[in-house]
Amino acid sequence: MKYCRRVDETGFIYNFFLILIISSAEKLQ
Image (cartoon, rainbow, N blue to C red; front, side):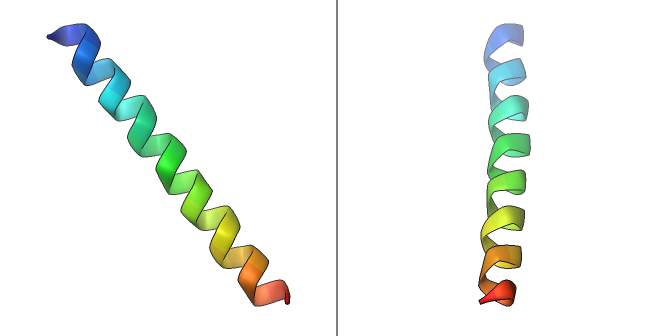
């Protein structure tokens, strides 16, 4: 269970950065 939550937190951070990069890329265009 602890390992599962760790993966969820990492996935959340990864998704957050991915959205951040996509939104900033759209602003540049």
